[in-house]
Amino acid sequence: GAGVSQSPSNKVTEKGKDVELRCDPISGHTALYWYRQSLGQGLEFLIYFQGNSAPDKSGLPSDRFSAERTGGSVSTLTIQRTQQEDSAVYLCASSGTGVGPLHFGNGTRLTVT
Amino acid sequence: SQQGEEDPQALSIQEGENATMNCSYKTSINNLQWYRQNSGRGLVHLILIRSNEREKHSGRLRVTLDTSKKSSSLLITASRAADTASYFCATETTSGTYKYIFGTGTRLKVLA
Image (cartoon, each protein chain N blue to C red):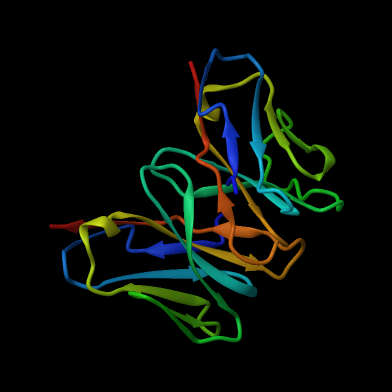
């Protein structure tokens, strides 16, 4: 079975442009997380989806960031009007019930020039 | 803000030695997990310890949890060069939604 898939692997964009990052979780996993990791730093929580419940958006750093999860499966993280400080690796993870091991994708490395 | 703080931030040891990393957290938890990250990409789950457990083993890994001190430790015995990676603790909080908050990580280097 496939693991968590993220695309693109790398994204270079100009400051001010919008970007969309995609995450395909493991089939059947109800919980999905987005994290951000700056170079050499820990993981910063962004947003958490659990089943049909309202997502926990408490980690989104500004209103330029948004995420959705369609049909309880694929998720898209959108960053509008990107800034240089948005440069980081964006990691997606899923788990079967929200309790238990998180399965991570390989991340999207975003570089804003 | 980060829930967990690992120490040390970096650790360098010789192959065959034991490596100990510590994690402290701030709020009540349901469980605590340890993850490993190679090359700054995806993390791999190592071990989960529940709040009512005090110690757990998996192969060369030993994890302890002290909820009264809000701390956990990860011991890797007989380390190998392949253990070189960053190690993170993650706590499932009991407040609000059940989400996982990661610590700042320990960068372990095992010298051959």
